[in-house]
Length: 334
Image 1: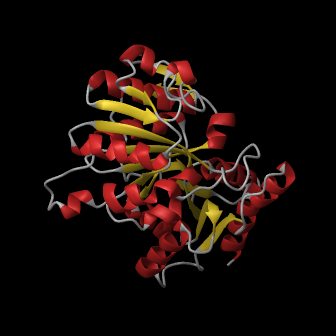
Image 2: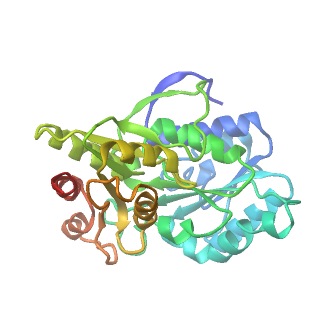
């Protein structure tokens, strides 16, 4: 077990530390997933490394490549009184277990009249990075945002990964915890204060204060937006960046307060714009602030095509700082 302290950590370290401390604090916390035990790699990105050595293979269980079985077993464990953390290696494969997640985990509390809770956390790597191709690179935020009873968390920093994963594990409802692949490959390290007050689910943060325009975003795209904001600052455009951290339930209050102040809004996310999470955010802003805005809310996302494999095509597919800069300039010019 890692002693509570403030230390510099990567995104991977933040997730590993959260699992470690949660398992140390509560014997009901168990981990399911492909190759999660130490003898099999400690997870595809070594995120669960060390856990089976410390807590044993009864609490850290490597599974077959069978997503339906992983979530089915985890749901059963949750209903029986455990606090399972199930790892679905890559986001695309959540669709294989869609029935378990959307039709069972998310509905059992309602269908039991509140007599049954499902304190299940599903961790899943998402997003495009490194040429994993069309079947291994999706970000299924919009797919599951419409599932009543399911909370969706998408942190962008090591500290938020730690605190929000702890919050998910302690929550009484099923949580889908989305970990962007690029945050593992190239995310910056930062200090994690494990003794700090837990970051609550559903609370956004102001990643950058500004007065001219609000950009609402989450996960890896936060860093693209911050890069764009830095470039635009040299042009005299002061960008406020709201990192949602939680997609469902999203922090409407924080977003609306910022939008009401700056009068201009851009919503940026890695997934495609059509039928995306940004459509809901844009709609709510227009419903609440119609007539107060300087112009329409603008949305920016990646191309609405399967994720390409080739490095050049993947880069062209992804939304990045240049596209976000263009959307912000258009919003400010309105």
